[in-house]
Length: 89
Image (tube, rainbow, N blue to C red; front, side, top):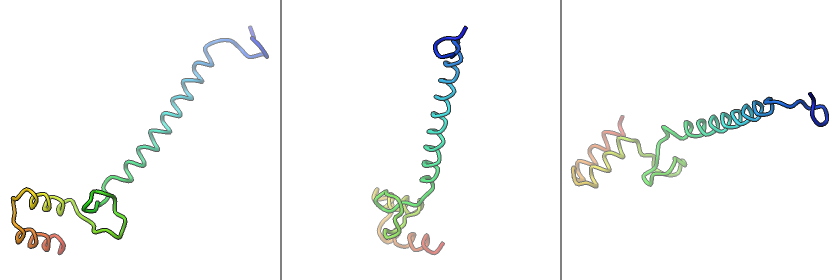
């Protein structure tokens, strides 16, 4: 039978609520995924921020070289020589 104002009783409202929730969750997931994929793979500056154009761009290889210098694995002369090699490529 029909309820108030001619609306039918039954589990239909539960199904519509679940589908609406799935739609919103999917939409949020897609937006977050797009934002994350847009940020991944970008070069970072030496402070770890995103590339703004005015700061020096540091490649992953250059970052590793800086870490090795900081740990004392290479000296400053080796660092400069290897940095020059990286800039040439």
